[in-house]
Amino acid sequence: MPATPITPAMLSIFIRGALIAAFATLTGCAALAPPPLSSFVVMTDDGVSVARVLTAGAVCPPFRLDGLDVAMSVRAPAATIAQRPTASAATDAKPSAFPVLACEAHIPAGTTQASVGGQPLPLPRTQLARIVVIGDTGCRLKTSGAFQDCNRTLAYPFARVAALAAAWKPDLVVHVGDYHYRENDCPAERPGCAGSPWGYGWDAWDADFFTPASALLKAAPWVMARGNHESCARAGQGFLRFLDPRPLLPGRDCNDAADDGVGDFSDPYAVHLGAGAQMIVLDTSSTVNKGFAALDARMAHYADSYRKMEAISHQAPYNIAVFHHPILAFGALRDKAGAASLFSGTKGLQDAFGAVDPGLMPKNVQAVLSGHIHLWQQVSFSSAHPTQFVSGFSGTTEDTVPMPQPLPEGASPAPGAVVEHFSSWVDGFGYMTMERTGAEQWAVNVWDTHGKVRNTCTLTGSKSTCARPQVD
Image (cartoon, rainbow, N blue to C red):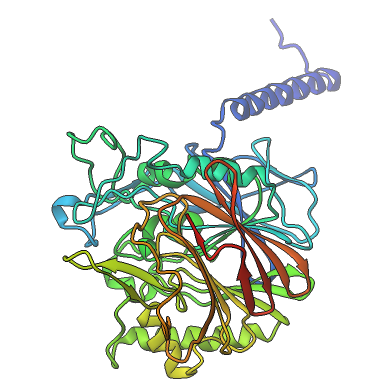
């Protein structure tokens, strides 16, 4: 039987049918693609923002900017990283499993709508006037330290803190570092944390940060400062894969301890707040509380960071520095006899910055936001030092030794720093907000886990005062 000739009309029908089938297949695959595990926006240098997406899928999900599809790039593929030397004993550590794909795409200035997998992303505004400040948010599981009851909301309230902070409708969220604390396996006999993920892989990162922070990640873009818990010997792998604003480069990924001299350091960068104000974000993950030896290589690294911070500070008339370790704050400890004593700001930064400038901070920096000490604190000076705020009270086990009020005569957190006003809240969980009320004025509130304001402060230029010297 002779073959039926194919007419142009038949060819057209065939092609249309093939295209429809292909489209149905593609849309079906899209419909079956898993939703993002987490999607958020990170602020980077010079006003640039980047969308980050974590997915269990094999490819990056659909990304739309102002109605147009844009391809995301793979920041880090799914992988399991061989066990490396860490801050824990080898028997208390394990390989870091990251069965998730990390994707990213830059968001051009002026973008009005962005979404990933159909989920809207928060975009930076021209002026970032309402700011949430949190820090030290993970749940502490440490064989050489303590085991926090991660399974109890009252003992580990970060999810509640994040939800309350999101309801405040911020323009920006600033995390001052220490996202991850679940380092070692919880003993089976401790029901408060039994069964918790641990180690430095995705499951611990998800439990410590991404799941409890989900409401706040959806609420506003973030500034992600790096803490000592994100150093290469701890959770640096996850921080660099997921949160760091810079490109992820081979050798700067904390996977090989031989590269830690690179992976543990990064340059300061600016985040523009609008109307003549900016934040300068520093990586202090490898500094130490007790100071550096004169020939310690970290002295040179942090001296270089100081010089770059100082240069950036000239780009705006009002500057807020953001770094994890407080340089101008107090902590308190009890000795074995029960007597309390104060300790001063992070000596490693004081050594390195002081070698460049005895004033410790650039003259054009008016305020410093830090964490590391697990409490809330405000210190303002009659000397030419910026106000220091500490917001390290958002999730991890709190410090409990009360701060003296008033401070002992002559008490100073750093050489030459003369305290004028001091306020603190010890042994209470919460978050801090800053609302801009003028060119160099901010209204600062301190909130608890019931959404109640526990203290109010005003920041004008480099000076601040608070209504309550001590929160009970």
